[in-house]
Amino acid sequence: MTAVRIGAVAKATGCTPRALRHYEEHGLIASARAANGYREYDDVVVTRVRNIRHLLDAGLTLDDVRFFLPCLDGDVASAPPSAAGLRVGRERLAALDARIAAQVAVRDRLAAALQAATTPPAAPPPTPGSLR
Image (cartoon, rainbow, N blue to C red; front, top):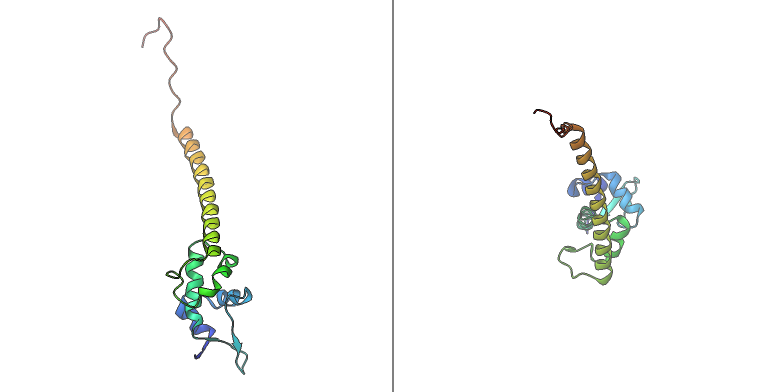
């Protein structure tokens, strides 16, 4: 394994150095310090960070990602699912479904308000004996 500086990891993964430090603060990746104080990562951290990003993009949180630590250094997308991973995925899906339903309700209320604001009022019905 070779040591890789934070800038190289950021470039290889599309992350910012700040995001990498954030992942490190959450215990998802680890670094060593070079003599000059720079962070150095094992080159396998690139795969780990890509997997972290994959899970985050799928709607998981950093706390959720912890359940996947044992498989983050390999092909996380094709690894057999664990019971904990499936539970976390189902919980996240339910939370997303609830947020989507809430957003659809807000959208429907806004669409109805706009419709009401732009539809001319209906003409009153004719009264008996009046000419049209």
